[in-house]
Image (cartoon, rainbow, N blue to C red; front, top):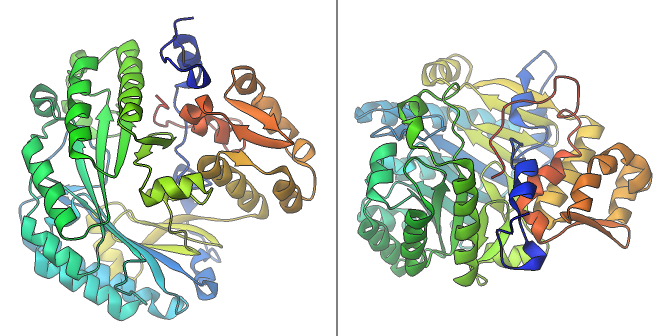
Length: 461
């Protein structure tokens, strides 16, 4: 086998990657969203909101000025700003629907995602956040995580002042790649100088964490061009980096049909890109948190990972776990101890539902006791990289080896390959296995292993 990494404890090979780099859920939830079913009579997972002690809020802003060909997000391409302004009216109306259905619990996390949240004008950003503050216990306190995604191509520096005044302290910039040919192929022209200017300005204004999103496996990308992008990124020194593998699913996402498949890198080249990028980030001092996330040692996310306090939700890894998540806007997903519920995807359907009944949920999932147990197991593996056998036994009412014999049998090949090991009765993901955390978690996914249970997911690498 050809080694692709220089360190023995994290050694990868073409053979290893060929066996484990296929499609697998990302486990931002369990069960995964593709398992949700239409809401039925008596299916009211939001009733559990009355019992919570902490709350996370997510607002989906779907609007973008132009179409990025790689994008799989729920989005609306428009230059008619009135559409976005009236959309906010519906979002705040939806938020008011929750006012009498949620305990007076403090909000510990607010995230604006998209689309492009900074498509909104400063006055509408203020209207949104202040409106949410009238409904929920939303405090402007830097111990709370206020995060926003931004498109550096259209971002206004003055908006940083507005965001800070509103309490935002974390900024995520979608870069993807700096190579001009790659940018043209995905219709996303972004100057490195603009990213650097925004980064410096955000730091001057007190944003405590800045993250960049990168993608490997894009058309015209090579090992050398990605290295050049990584070099420029490292020089700017973001606190966090997400390095995603491009999932080309044109049968599901129409925009991806505009990508020339002949320009796509070969599988071996994509593997080399991933390995080379990880090595470069490691050499630059970034800690590999697992899957596709990296952070500088001093960043809160890295400290949480070292302390075993990392958590995961629909926005990815977080250090602000909450008892429940309320998602507002088209396609947004909410969660409570009772289960999940998701809003209509299409903007028209979402708007009509809010106007008619103030609520846009159309599908979801009611959690069973087995779901809750497996949710715990999968999130422990995804976040802490281990299962404590005593904690599992207390929850399952039987030893790990007895309660999950079939799951441990599924993990045997991964154990043979050094991705997982037993340690004092605990199940531990090795340093090498961090590349394949999703595969380890998937062994405990009851629905994935049902007859006809496999769905179409993004590839691990």
